[in-house]
Length: 248
Image (cartoon, rainbow, N blue to C red):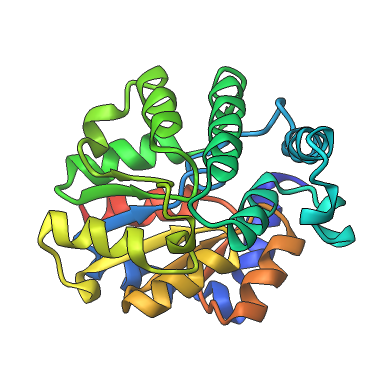
C-alpha cells in the first residue's frame, strides 16, 4: 500500500474528518508541539528500549533493584523508569543523577534522530503565516535546542521551549509546561493547538483547555490516542501542511 493510499484510508475514519482538521488549524494562533514523535523520532537509532534497560541496570548496580516493580524493570520507556524513582524518592540526589543520565542519552540520540515526515516544512510554513510556536515536552529542553539547531529551526520556536525540569511530578499529563508556554506567549488556551502523539499529551491539553491534534504513525498509537479520548488524529503531517498552506 502506498503512503497516498494509506492516508486516504485513514482519512475515511470519523476522527479524520477533513473539516474537523481544517477547523482546528483555522482557529490556532499558537501551536504547542510535543517533541519526540511530532517533530522527530528522537530514538530512531539510539533505541529508547536500550536506554531504559541501561537505566534499570544502573539502579541495580547500586543495589536499588527493589525501587522498581517487575513491570517497571521490564519497561521499554526510560521516562517510566525516571518517574517511578521520583515517586519513591522525590527531589533526591538519586533522581537528579538518573535524570542527568537520561538527558545525556537523549543528547546522544539527537545525532541520529529522524525528522518526522513533513514536520520541518510544516513548522516553517506555520511560522511564515504568523503562528507562534512552542515546544512542550517531557524531554530535556537541552535536547530540543540541540536538535532544532541541527535542523535550522531554532528561530521558529525560540525562546518558547519548555521541557523536563527537576519537578518531575509536573511532567505531562500535568498541563504545567503547556501553561508555561501560554503564559509566556500571552495566549488564551482556546487560541492554541497542541500536537502530540501520546495519551499524556492529550490529557495535558484537555486539562489546559487546549484543542488537540493527535499524530499517530501507526494504528497502535492511534488506538491509544482514541482510548484516551482524542477525536482528531492524523497518520501523516502532510494534510496538516496542506491545510495550513490553504488557510495561509
